[in-house]
Length: 347
Ligand SMILES: [Zn+2]
Ligand SMILES: [Zn+2]
Image 1 (cartoon, rainbow, N blue to C red):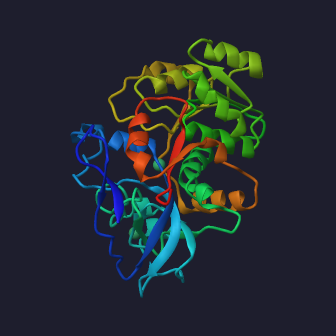
Image 2 (image 1 turned 90 degrees about the horizontal axis):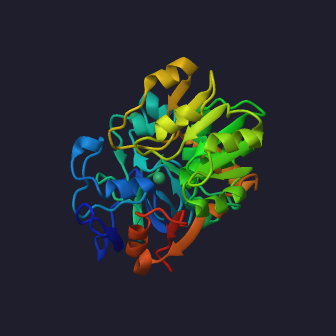
């Protein structure tokens, strides 16, 4: 099968021919229909040592964890009652299925979990991907394959918004209009925020924000973010989300937050950062870090997509085949108007 192979840190991915994965008896083999390029993969492809908290990828690794596809083979002990031809997306890991974390829908905390796209288990920048029967979720009829590939990033946003304990009518500021920021905007709108304001240094990125649920956008390159926010909402935001994840972004979110405010750190910063704690102390801020999602996040995202209550389609800025995939991956390393680019192996 074809796959986009990691060769060395900082090097472009190479499209090559590799052996199709062999599913274990409890697994499914899935024909990949769409797979999104994630910021995590961009970071991961540059990791050279363990200092950022992640191990460098081995040569030949296949990334890609935001995917959906069609089941083409079902292991004879695979849980879930799957059949060939079923349309699915999946949690991007295979876990034991029996420990307390697995039973609670948090298989990513399972001690036996192996993660798709991190070198332990092949990811979905490929024609086929191996999926655990217990980790697969059916795509309802109302969810097409492009939407199916957005379930993972939408779940990241949902998990972050759950952690914010949003109250009806809250004014929200989202720092960063990348895929995570847009997914957070969508769910803040869904759960009844009065103002969903998103700021970014690249004004072009704000174009998509309205279609994803933002009520206003602030161009942080030319506008005073908190000054403009107060004009819009009449006060500081009750909740601030850091959806950037670079050194300095947590401090910004802290500065924007009000007295007794809530702050959620959803951007994943893998470099050392320094903050001035007294800023958070004097405001008595509640700061919540979030990571990944739970199975219930996937389930709610799927159901709301199926019923037409949410639509994440505006986040997709390009769909590419293997011929353009490596170049698209490189382009995303420089922030631009591009947001979510999907691989479609059949293009
Ligand atoms: Zn992702
Ligand atoms: Zn487990």
